[in-house]
Length: 53
Image (cartoon, rainbow, N blue to C red; front, side):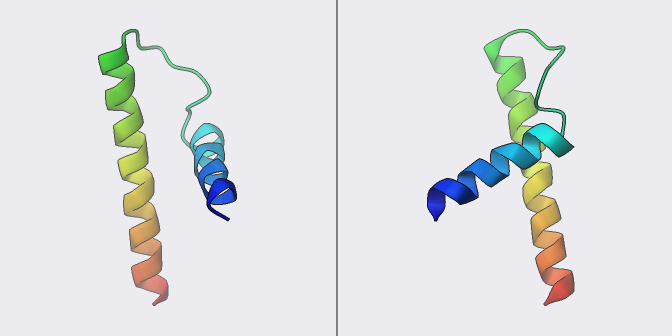
């Protein structure tokens, strides 16, 4: 179950949030971009779960 959930998260990030490629260079910049993308995904999931509850 957990493996499928994690795979789904990365698939959403790649398909919906532009994680297939980047214009940034360097580990620090890429890490910052990934954290911002996952933070926005978490905020969206939290919002949807609060609205539907």
